[in-house]
Image (cartoon, one colour):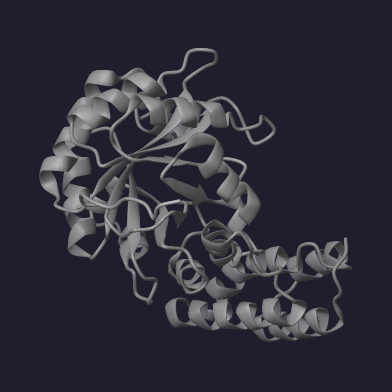
Length: 328
């Protein structure tokens, strides 16, 4: 297989990207994913309106602050000028790509005619994409869901409009806006979208292993794989996927010792960015994910949930991983 995206604004950005995840893809986690093979990492979804209003918490989400390699900013909004202004701010901060979210189904987002609501607003999509494309020089992508409600696939028309307005890549999460993870992702829709467009296509959905990441490329022809839940507790998925695609083989999953080393590294990165209280809140969930699949992890996660300080959390992690073996 060729290495992708040779030519245009996306040249050399790679095939396996960390997808935006609310409350998760902060600067420390983006750095961990980058160090373990993610070729591009995204911020959490950022409100364009809050960014332009210079909301302090929102501005902090835009700070790369750590060495997380090439990083993208995902914006959500419905006013073309506001989204374009936010895109300019993101580019000025050093973002490598601007993604416009047109797939988030959360009611408070949809109520403002943003996210997945844009699947029903083709004219507004054209205005937003065109406005952002004219505002920045970095690549612009659009993230879609399959459609507002099954069986009507709105993504094909919206993608065509976005392509005509100059987007550099279309990303598709092939579930409908009212579907959750219990519904299997329809990878065949990614393949059909790829066949319809000239611009590169990114796929996401149900990529929980390196084998699934490579299979998505093989089955759909997509140019990029966005990995979300599959990276939780397993940031090594990116280097394994790259190895599997390039050589047909990949390294085994990390040992308990490697999980502990990565957790400690992650914790130290968190302390570079936040206070101990904030770091404790953020890192407890990551420690639960790092322990997943090891013997005793269910009981351990309950202990982590009740932990009240970082020193105890670190000691708890050291004891658990020292005694851990692969298992349920």
